[in-house]
Length: 294
Image 1 (cartoon, rainbow, N blue to C red):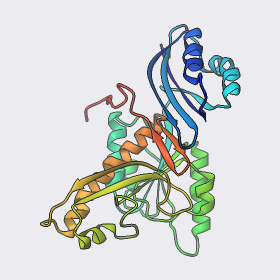
Image 2 (image 1 turned 30 degrees about the vertical axis):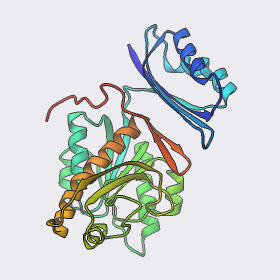
Image 3 (image 1 turned 90 degrees about the horizontal axis):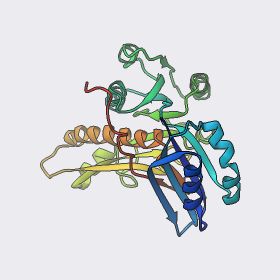
């Protein structure tokens, strides 16, 4: 049986859930997982429904039949085939922990994505990427060629059909134009528990302040540096005995986990933009299962 999901965003109104559930039942579909959130502050409603088609209904049929309901509630909605893997481009500089973690999760099937390219401004990870049979593009970035470099990056993204760009410790600031063009489709990992300790060396700042928790934040990229809607965060405890280098090492583990969880949420369409914030629904049963163990 085919597995699909439906995502819905609209103004809150009585009868939305009933209309969706009734429609799916009438069209031979059985709901397997459902999550919803009614934001009383903004008046916006969010819903994600996973379902199976028990009578052979396909996406085109469902989209056409659902149109009147979507119009009635002025819904921003999408039907998705859960078996189709999202195409992803990863961008990285010289810190490889997040890249290597994503490649491992992808290889064992824990992140069901199609990595169509890796872009870097350095050659450090060419061999690692090529050994995974993934196209590697080294696009150097200098002060005098940033516009040309970004144009080359966008060509790779567009020609590969990528739906998502993941900045796996890519240490270059993207232009406002690229951020707007790819709005909601670029995920970054910031090596700090935002909004504290921003900038180039947050672990040193945290060390100097004697913090007892360090963390990482994954967020969508916007024109406002490190201010994009937050998807995922986590922390690790620190004591007075840890050195600044310990902070960096412990932080790298957190960064890898947080970025992977953010990507997982996005590719399963569990993340909804809600102004400057996000709504992130829990994972559906079975979505963390790996195809292989190593």
